[in-house]
Every structure is written in structure tokens, then in C-alpha cells.
Image (cartoon, rainbow, N blue to C red; front, side, top):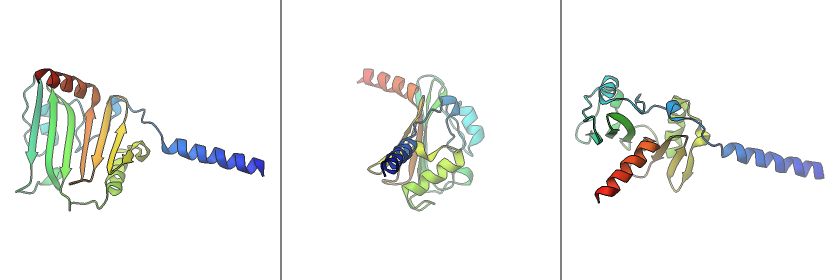
Length: 170
């Protein structure tokens, strides 16, 4: 009986440990979003997307495109708004808002499909209060379903640099 009890405790601990798996992926191994990869230039982004991405090469720049009045086509179908943030000519954050009625009914469906398509283990996502986050080595992913399905991937090192420079301005 004691052996059975100890075995059950070990099993529960192992399952809990597996479910809390930490993301050890590096920035170079980060998944794509809209087939965009962190670190690419505006010209490279334009070659992937069906739109022209314009951003200056120095400092922090944001490219924004919305599809509120007119639906996006091709690889951008279902998107409500797209933010591409560049620092010194390199993409450091991709943020996508989808139309609410586009495809997914729940945050879990949304994360499951993204994780499956990008070969990104779903166990890396931690969800609390309707927000999901995955912290890896050098990058993070955030997703929610609060207003619209929303996901973003960020180069954390560059985001800290941009944030510190913005704090100095104010």
C-alpha cells in the first residue's frame, strides 16, 4: 500500500513538472508569425507579405496597417490590424489582431492551432485570467482573446532597449 502511495505521488509530481515545462528555445529558434521572423528588415518583410512595409532604418519605428473598413486579402485574410515594430532596421516585434469572427472560438483553439503550425510546444504557454504568455530565451509570445484574437512575438532584449529610451524621453 505504501509503495502504491509513493508511486502515485511520484506520478503526479512528474505530470505537474511536465505540464510546467520551461521554454529553452533561443531567439534564433523563435517561431514565425505571418511567416515573418524576428530580426528581418522592412524589405524582407515586404517580400513575405502582400503589402509594402515602410520603416526607417534608425531608431524605433512602427509600421501599422488596419483592415477595419476593407478586408485583408491573401496571407493577411482575417486580420483586423497589424503592427510591425523595428529597431535600427530590424524587426523586433510582430503584433497581430484578428477579426473576432475569423476562425477561432476560444483562446485554447487559437493557441493550439498556432502551436501546431509553428511546431511550438503548447506546454510553453501559461494562461491566467484570459491572457497567455510563453517566455523563452530572448523572446516571448503573448496572446489573448479579450477584444479580438490577438498574438504578438517580441525580441525581449530589443524591447527593453526601446522601453528604456522611451522612459528617458518622458
